[in-house]
Length: 124
Image (tube, rainbow, N blue to C red; front, top):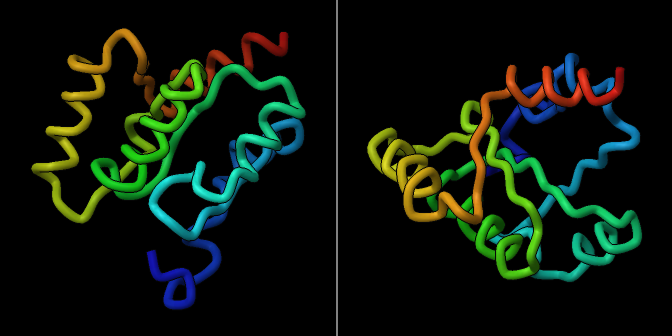
């Protein structure tokens, strides 16, 4: 994405999720895979994280690269299906189908509403 061309509000964490930061952390990346520079892995290991909720753009490019790296590193991977997007609806939809079918043993999908409800109930 072209961060320098977007209004900062368009890439900010939505208000409803800001209450989870901390302990949740945001990790910006500047290449396709979030694993490329090693910083994410270092942060996750230090925090003893075992589950990742993944959102972002593009579903079939950057999200895919990050998901594959997470699977390779044995994380529980949960894709927030309505928090990923693409420039092409057809490949976005196809990739969500692949995540649910081909990667069904390694990847879970939830909606943002389902994720928030689960996180809120776990805090109660």
